[in-house]
Length: 306
Image (cartoon, rainbow, N blue to C red; front, side, top):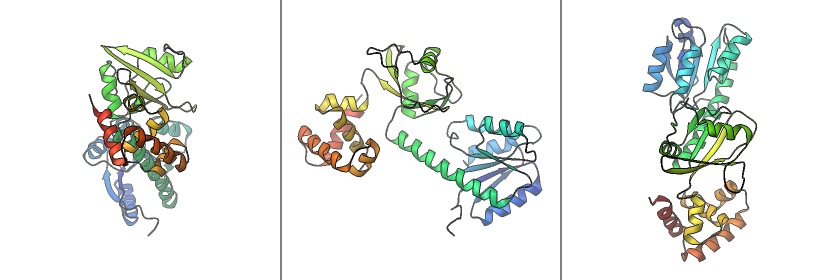
């Protein structure tokens, strides 16, 4: 059926055996792979053993309550995009605030109306899938990206960014903070970089030299920062120097190296496919190659050299 959940894995956490049985039966009929837990500690162990696609979390449980369980889960690497929907018997502002503050994406009030629950689950599963897809694309294309909030609390980082941060003594674990100098820059836009660009911050420690480049300024709580190893320069800058191409041509070549088609590159770089084709002609001429696979091979050799 079109609205089925297509085998997504749900973890239901509730200290009530009756609630677990009711939800388990209902969600199994909708095509979900269902796992259940009657305590917060058990839920954390189960999630680490087999990562769920979505969690239904009872707010009030003895011992470790749902709010603290959610905080622990969301702090672990790999669970950043895991949607947690709280189930509570209290439609009170305090519970709503605690649910969202602990990392939940939504809440439903008991007794639960299954049609509303299913609709909310579909929305959050779809959003989570898009977020994971975007994060996987960043990881697999070797992008040096770190996300933090306005207080410098790190939400997530790509593996490449984590490695580069470690070289200047910054931990990239979830719930770690960026140094005070970077927080001041994020807060007031001051810069210490030649050229006076407020979106670029220069940070040097332990014999390494990196730039923080602010990618997003949307006014929300998440700030995206791109890291650049100043010894090597950004990927497109390396390609431009190596092959004598323009920065725009280097951007096109970079995505060719990551296996993107001309149409995909046009969408990514916000240009027409015809403009991408013209850039490709110039790239072929300057690299003295005839095929995109040859151009990609040359680009990868530059980007992957130590």
